[in-house]
Length: 81
Image 1: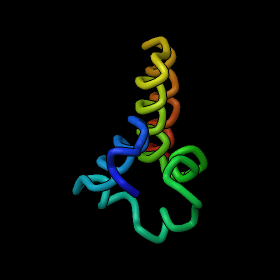
Image 2: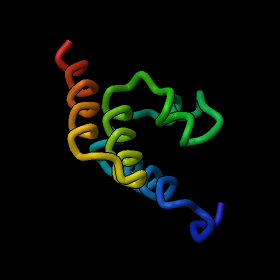
Image 3: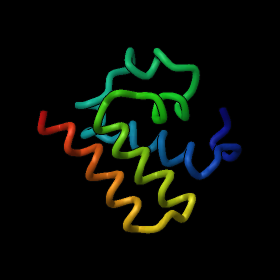
Image 4: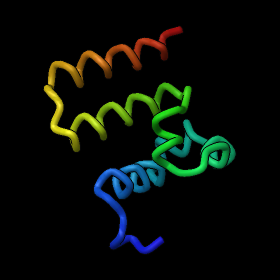
């Protein structure tokens, strides 16, 4: 896919998955289970991916900061388990 035709969310998702830190927490096989990156970020059980999805969609959809923070905390708490 041409990078010029990506939405802002798609470009952010793609860039984040290329970072060394995310490569530690997300495998190519995990991503391949889904039809596209939007589905992967939305349906993934991976807490790192879920937290990033909250940040990405919250920011691009201009959600209230308190709502983003609350959703983010909920997802990050699962890392403690």
